[in-house]
Image 1 (cartoon, rainbow, N blue to C red):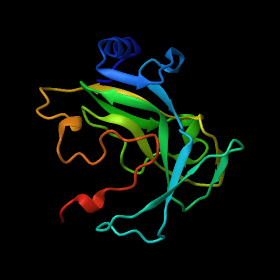
Image 2 (image 1 turned 45 degrees about the vertical axis):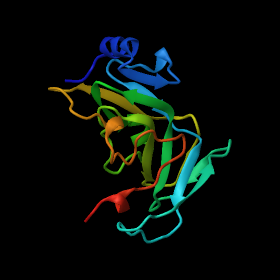
Image 3 (image 1 turned 180 degrees about the vertical axis):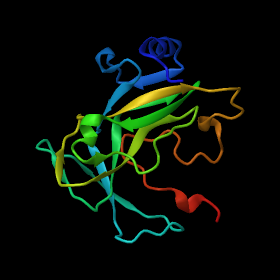
Length: 178
C-alpha cells in the first residue's frame, strides 16, 4: 500500500516525513517530486574495485547545463533533504526523465525507516542528454511499515549512508566484510 497525497500531508504535519525545501505544488496524488541538485561526481578511476575505497571527483552543473554521456556513471544528488521516520521511502524516476533515456538509480531506489539526508543518484543515460540543476529528476513514494522497527537507519552503528550531504556520496562497499 502506497501513501496517498492526504496521508503524506498528514505525515509531514506529524514530522514523520520531512522534506526541505518543501513545495506543496510538487506533491502528486501518491508521490512527491524531487529535483536534481547542483552537484555531480564521477569516479577518478576507470576500473572500480569493490574491496577498495574508490574516490570521486565533484563538480557543479553549470548554468547552461551538462551533457551526460552514455557508458558513464555519474553520481548526482537530490536538491531536497528528506527524513522518513515511520515509512519506507522509495525513489523512482519520473516518466519524463525516463523518456529522455536517463536512469536515476542502478539498484538503490529503496530507503530505510530512519533515512535522513539527500539522496545520492546513480545516473546513466542511453544517448547524450543535457541536464540542469533544479530539473525534476524523480519522485518519492512512501510505504507503511508492518510491525515495529527495532533499530531505525539513523540509529544503526554501521549505517554507511546516514545524513548524506548535498553532494553525491561514493560507494561504501569497501566497508563491508567479504
